[in-house]
Image (cartoon, rainbow, N blue to C red; front, side):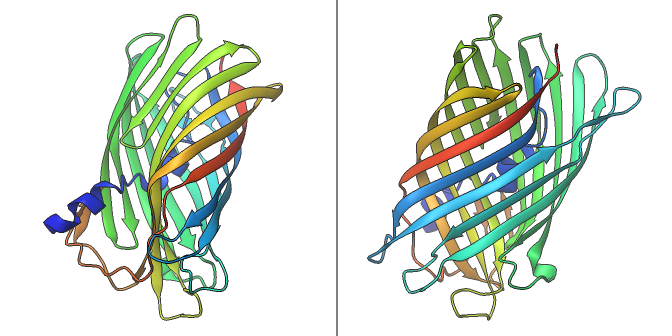
Amino acid sequence: MRFDQFNTVCTKIQAFFLALFFLGCLPHFGQDYVNILRLYGQYAPDAEYADESGKTGLSKFGTRILLPVPLENDKILLPGLSIEKVQGKLSMDHSKSTTVYTISPQLGIQFKYDKDWKGNYLLLPSLYSDLEEIGADDFQLGAVVTFSKTKSENFNYLFGMYANTEMYGLNVLPLAGLYYINKAKTWEVDILMPIYLDVNYRLSDKLRFGLQYLGRGTTHNLNKYGEDSSGYYLEKGSKDIFVYAEIPVMKDWALQGMIGHSFGRYYEVYDRDEKLDWAIGPVLFGDERTQVNGEISDGLLMKFKLIYRYPLTK
């Protein structure tokens, strides 16, 4: 990796699809509920082109489903599905927005080794594409392995590894996290570094406030870029910070309203043949790629989530 690329690389805290899918479709260790279903939408209004005059809106809508199946000997199957649609104009020169999709089933299993240690093993075969056509370049394969240890009823920690075959090549990301809730169950802290942090306070049974950080990115095959069909891919992501309020809307359902700001946003387009040697998280080796489009600036974010939580305790 060239030294003059280091600052740019460090702004891309590449959580990739793990933040979008793994965090949403695996029960967080230590919690007394499982997020079975999430519906969400996000909008960034008037995102400016950094090197050109003009603005674009960036929208995102998706759903995540988890259907855990208990087995014998404390094993749990972890099947799931995630679908997301992202839309925006990648260049001021384009007359129409580009839309990319993520469709990813989750195949996983959890093993309980003793009263304190658990292991999770996930396989993530995914489609990252504009769906103009579907071919081999539209598919990626990811895997997650994590181990969590229960220290007490209120505290757990986790470590592991994530790997995915991005459009530019293999990326490997080490993981470390923890979960804490106080005895009164008013303060909750949920962390999976380097990609996710949530700190929230339950004011009452009807209202919760929180602060959330999410750093993530994905790569998508572009069968068509504007009017050009010669073959490109999109590398997108950002580091987003939100404040939010959560209210119950019916039994076991919650609604979150969120407002925040993006940092280090990037929607970069590259020729399909331009690759890296390899990558460890945000550190990219052999990055000699030439970006086709311009930069899109940071800005305001508005987001909502509708969550169905299955209680583990009655």
